[in-house]
Image 1 (cartoon, rainbow, N blue to C red):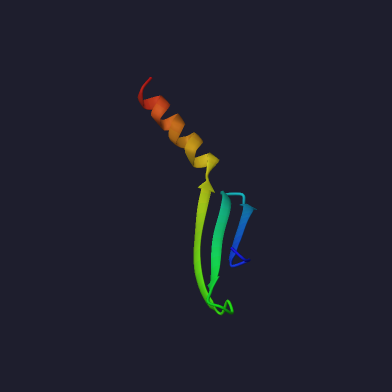
Image 2: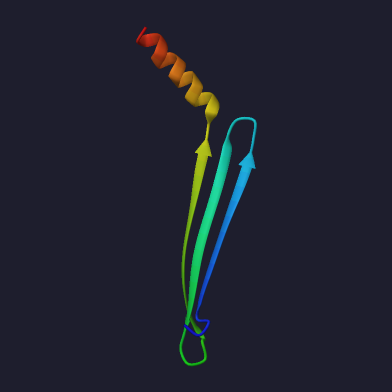
Length: 67
């Protein structure tokens, strides 16, 4: 496509004492026109939180209720 489409992606991991987060980002830029001076950009980002302490406590509570 004559270098008109550029794809970019990134992943970042943050660790804290209360939670872990994974950030993802993807973007695409398309340059149109004879001189590539018209740009169209599309991007998406997402955050995934991992909370192992809360999951373990919830599992314990459910386990106690069904014993």
